Image (cartoon, rainbow, N blue to C red; front, top):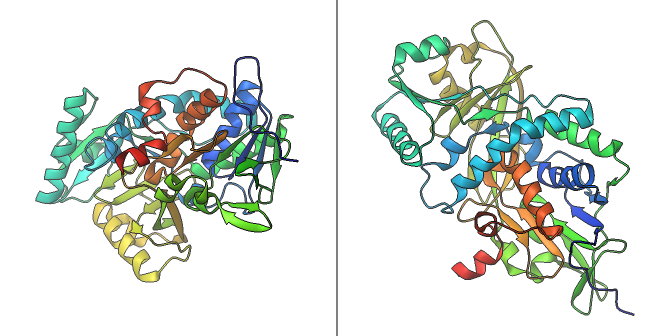
Amino acid sequence: MNPPPLAPPHSSFTPKVAILGAGIIGLAVAFELAIKRGVPVTIYDPAPMGRGASWAAAGMLAPAFEAAAEEGVHPHLFDLCMEGAELWPDFSIDLAHAADAESGYSGRPSLALAFDMAETAAMHKLARALDARGIAHEELPPGTAHLLEPSLAPDLVAALQMPTDGQVDNRAVVRALIMALQRSPLATLRSEAAPLRSVGGRLSLEGHDLILAAAGWSTAAIKVEENGERLSLVNWDPALDEIDCYGGQMLSVAHGYGSPETTLRCGTIYIAPKADRVIIGATVEPGVATEAPEPAAISALLARAARLCPVLADLPIIETWAGIRPGTRDRAPLIGETAVPGLYVASGHFRNGILLAPITARIIADMMLGKPMSELHQSFSPSRIGAVA
């Protein structure tokens, strides 16, 4: 006997939702559904929950620096990132209340830095893009920047203050999400792979009506049992094959006298001070799926960061690590229902997974509960992959 088809959401129907993947995206969706909307959820993940890319990240909430002037990205990525940033203050309050734990959210402005002509040109390009969008920012002379952040190197040429770009302690966030969900009677956390099955070409997960695939860069490889075989989910929607891996290596150093207190950006280098450490990152390595940091890459990162803030060269290293980001060709996530009725996806967030977690959760919850969708949100549907092809 074939299992019943996954039921579509409608106004009088409260679905039972299975979430495959317990990174910050899957956990945020579970938080939105179970705690904020009263929808029962089960989160499946055979790996330690809240780890992977969510643990490896630096927690920057950077719509301006990451999306305002980037070329070749989804045309509405910046708009989604700005919407995501606007949700973070309330999201952090709700999370702290539900978990009785802080998230380390800070809306303090970030600084983009320039030390040579090429970096100055890139900074001016970003400023022009923000001007065109009417986004608040301020170009600062070196003296003013040094007053704001005394740790900066003396040969600073220019700086750009970005009030839109804050940060959060991503590790604190995933811990708080797990704590909040463990307290909720509507959330079940299972440290195992979901027993996803296909019968007659239809996907089924016993006891659940709707499914969200949110397993980061390995989303397409989620296993489905069919006729005794274990096949990959990409066989049901080839658009999932768009999600690729992008390795990243990072380190953290201890706070010391005169260590930076402001989130700093310069090219691909960032410095993100947390309460208990200063994070330095990150490499971007397309197609690399390793979680082992390389000493040479870590040394290069530290040297480049010390160019921005010389004090960093003398601070003890606390930790080095590597993570694997899920990304797509247009650097934008796949958010929405797949080609399989009742199967949704939320993955491919690249360098903006922490920033976009609350807005992704809201979009998926609205879709599953039959709420009307904006054109902006619809534009991140996985169906766009086939349209482009």
